[in-house]
Image 1 (spheres, rainbow, N blue to C red):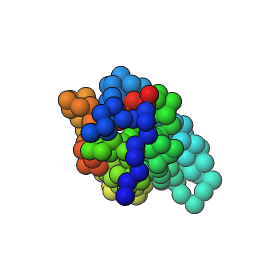
Image 2 (spheres, helix red, strand yellow):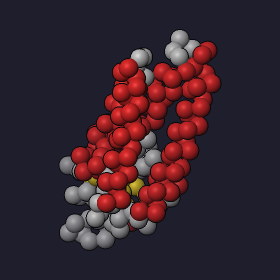
Image 3 (cartoon, rainbow, N blue to C red):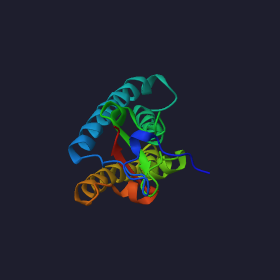
Image 4 (spheres, rainbow, N blue to C red):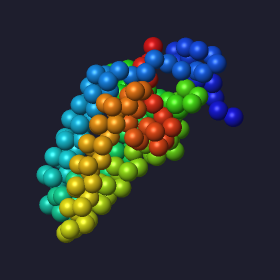
Length: 163
């Protein structure tokens, strides 16, 4: 049986929803996460030659791990979301998103980064998939009336403001 959502989340006991995250706040959280990802990518590039992997392979593996784990943090929120007071919830119930939902939400990007880690042409296909997914996800979040990106629709999640 699912746990009751926290009191700050409940606006309407019938639907258990909180105010949606605004587009500007989502963009700010994405910016924080992009900065974190770039920092990790730089670290992978610098450390890659000292490992059994090449720099690009290590960077791609780090990025895949970042995307896979980013919404599994405290309160179903990545560091950028936590910093800006956002949390990931089940779109239907308003309860915090489950780990499975978080993985579903980011699964396509994880797969693209793992593909980018492969050598040769497959790695280039993966890099193009990362770029394409980033564009599709960004456009869907901007164009969706509820501000939900494609990954949110797939996982049945949405971002809301914490109170």
